[in-house]
Length: 168
Image 1 (cartoon, rainbow, N blue to C red):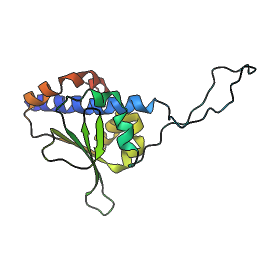
Image 2: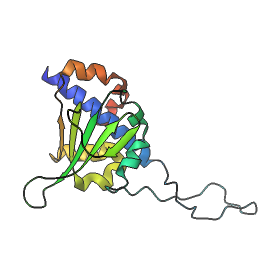
Image 3: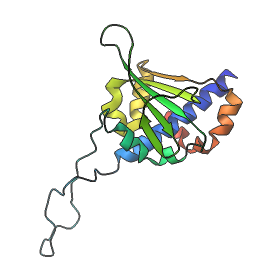
Image 4: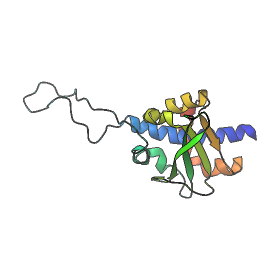
């Protein structure tokens, strides 16, 4: 049973990570080309864009644009909690409620899953898989669920395609 729970946790994490990874590869809509391409220019393909710089303020919008958020089940609710250890003990910062096609700052009672990550990884979440792997390796990532492993696996089965992000 414990192995199944870990597998489910990894699946959910993978789903979230995959969305962020995909988003990290997307270009910032407000970026400008580094060169001017006009009909007389011999250069046609070397356009440079700035990557998205994630902060706590733009994290919800960035996550919401990710494909994995659309793969969350219609009645699925994930709570992403950020924390720090600046004072020597865990201090909770922002919370984000993640539902199908929606990410909002705030909290919710009884989410299916609670993901917690140190806020120092926010800027790295554009490469979600690597950020989660690093946070896990450093003991800065947590997963909780009040649901049974079987119920969680069944409910989030549509997110299995993200499992490679976590090395499963």
